[in-house]
Image 1 (cartoon, one colour):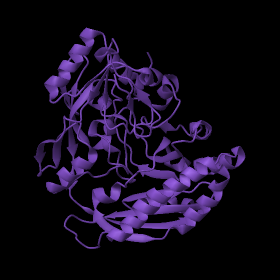
Image 2 (image 1 turned 180 degrees about the vertical axis):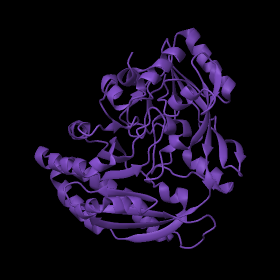
Image 3 (image 1 turned 180 degrees about the horizontal axis):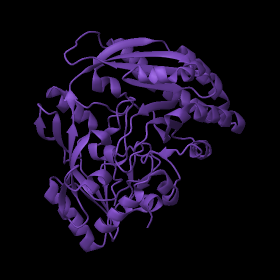
Length: 434
């Protein structure tokens, strides 16, 4: 019996056994065998969730070997992909087919099923999270049945399982609506937070993808404006190799790691470090394939909490967070990440029928995040903040019923599909009830 630990190191468990099925029949057999042996089952992806969503003392199911493309329809852009496929592998496979995901998050290490099940999203006011790109699912339910669902066939399961938290079954295949491969012109530059918030609608609505990083204890932000080029447009050029190594590897990862270590050991250095870092940033513009712009390397390990709030609430949330930091004396070396997304109709998506701003707060992996994250949670609670399912939060089922109007429907389906809680764990008890 070995110990499994997530990417950040803040969650671990000792599963009784680990299954690595290949193919839907083997996944179904894992379910059947576990039920026979009285053991619980938990699928696991890349371990990029910061919550206990992936923990089990029963059978841990790794789908790493269940990966790759199943079918590609270039005419419609519909792609069938096995659920264990990592996003960075999927991006390369799609690119070879002349296709791309319409939007992605800023990390591409997750598995397809893991990213969907926790509600992963990117940024773009007219684009939903990844769940909004799903056309159909294949899922093995706790009774060992293989079910396919879409908007016409088994629609309730489709709407619930796109962001299913691993509570309704093990997703084995996903049909995605992809688009012709495209390139992005990326423009990154420092700015003043107050000025950006004053013109927020212009920043968000006038660009295909907009996000920003606010440096706590300062009034400085790094803005990222991304413009999608038409398919076939080859204008612009990628970052020179030296600039990529300097900015993304040395400064954004290597030097940042050292800064975080120093700030965690000597908190009084946090403010001057952030002040220097926020003013040391230089503007840059480059053009590259979409997936190379969306995702960035992340080698500095951290813990994270992220909430979706109505877009109009963002300025108040950031001002209140700034006041909390000043009042509490909490010292934070990590920038606060702010992104935007369109509504979708997945029942447990943070974007369910609501356009959101997403606010993500982080602490270096060796720093106790509880005071910071608790203060943040109290702020977003006043704005009906919905937690990212893979990021740290303390909300329980009663509060979540108020935030997710279709949660009762998910609970009904869970009772039908998994009355014995074969797929249960402590996290699911917290957010969905016993």
